[in-house]
Image (cartoon, rainbow, N blue to C red; front, side, top):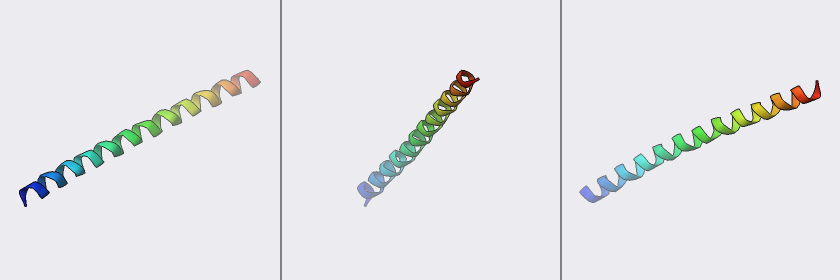
Length: 45
C-alpha cells in the first residue's frame, strides 16, 4: 500500500511539473509571435 502511495505522489508531482513546463513554453511562443508581428509591421511602414 505504501508503494502505491509513493508512486502516486511521484506521478502527481511529475504531472504538475509537466504542466508548468508546457505553460512556460506557450508564453515563450506567444512572445516570439508578438516580436515577429512587431518587426513585420515596422518593415511594412
